[in-house]
Amino acid sequence: MQAVTAARPLVAAPALCRTQLSSVKAFRAVPLVARPAAPASRSSALSQSIVVKAAAVAVADAPTEAVAHLRFIRGSAHKVRRVLDQIRGRSYEEAIMILEYMPYKACEPVLKTLLSAAANAKQNLGMRKAKLVVSECFADSGPVLKRAQPRAQGRAYKILKPMCHITIKVKETEA
Image: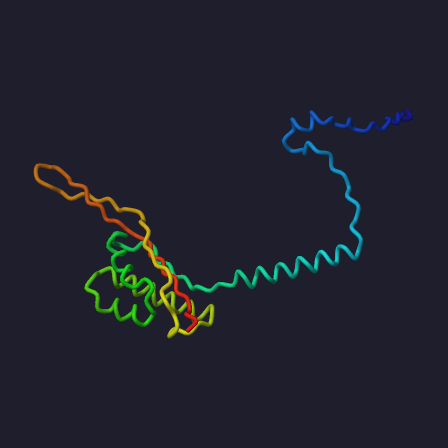
């Protein structure tokens, strides 16, 4: 017996109309049209202008400040802020002297963050520590640890142990 193979006519898939395309999420409602290629001189001039603009943006976006973050510090942000208010706007060396002689527990993490910011400025940006100034410093609230304190007659009082995040930015002075 001889197998008979009937050739099936090739039928193109039906084209979707615009309303069908808009109802399907995967397709775009606007038909895709091939754009003519730009002339060679125009495209090279365009690419050169893009390179020049990118270089200008890179120079403008060059970092002028070094930043250090210290996160999840045990202590309230309110108590850390009273220390940060004393060093804001001061020179790096003056801020270190102030922090070493202040009688607050919050001085230790603030000093650690300041030393880290100065090290970042020297290592990453090539700034001199003698010319650094604390340009910005702030403390944000962090999570709060909730604990219970046993009290009389089986009661328990709530104890809140707040945390904070310290950020210090230093920049080099022009003088």
